[in-house]
Image (cartoon, rainbow, N blue to C red; front, side, top):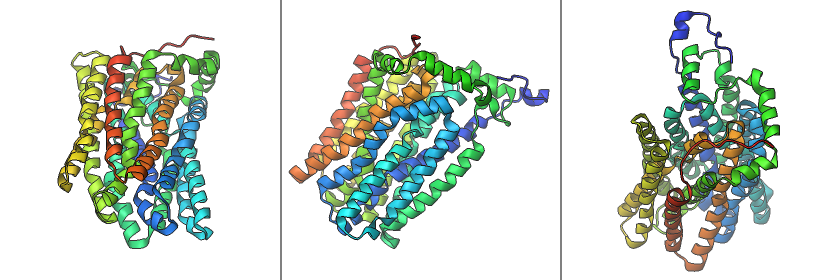
Length: 452
């Protein structure tokens, strides 16, 4: 790292805030990421009518994204550690946006069977293309933010999932209502292609960014940021990965009790996430008798609460660190408290008034937002040589829930004709998250690799 990069001493003494611009960019990209995942949940009712999908088939189509997303995590993590976030993430955004755009054309295939097959394939391809996104986010945050800001930064980009629902769910519902379901995929794909170009123009590593002052660079590094320069450290990064032992590195990560508990908890948290991304709007239409437009608007209310909780959880966690609490206490208190609140989703089975249902859903997603600090924990604990790979394993575990949740709920709804069992399934996973952090995860600290 070149600490003499700033020629003007006055400029060197001024701590710039370029890291916040980088955070804003990954927040916007992550918002689009989640909005693209949710396109099918919004257009699903209209597409079920057009192509005669039953609940079980719909569940499998929902899961197509996550099959590829999970299977692609380890290659994505390796690519990120080998080639860096800038190029890998740009390719990821471009490809998932292209596959989103192509989903608008499945109606041209003629038969319902061909449309179903094409939709499954495109959702599968989109899942593979999106696989580097969250490990890249964690890698960028670990590089650009010191430890005492990392919880808030991670919570902000993770809260984009709720912001996506607030902004894009009503928009996509309106597009479906006014122009047909095809318009959703055209608009979302075009936005993504533009963001891919923006990422390439704006993103650099902290040590290489021309607008970062020496004071900001020192602040990040001295505070625990994993500061590296792309040009000067590419070979060192590649050698570190090779020296760590390839698959031996994966075994080390999976053999660490703390990391394994964190990975398991992310699976459970994502059960709530994927219920919201897949079946929640359909639940509002089928179980609560709302129109697609009403469901799109109502779904934004729990999303607002989830977003608020997500930001609050990060701020609370970092605030506890600044007050002298250990990293373990600062991360576990919001996670455990938030997930206990999420169990309130089961209460929807025992009320019939729509506004109470929405209130309970909002409380559940507010709690889930507070507790969704897993990416901060990954940035805190992953070996410095393998931030991308550790984040990829974490994301792989978490998104197995994207395979399991829509299929399990599809079967429960098909067999019982009710969403009651589905909500119990979701609430039970919130409790399992609490168990994981209290019993399996002990002290939260950075893992040191054993060399091969």
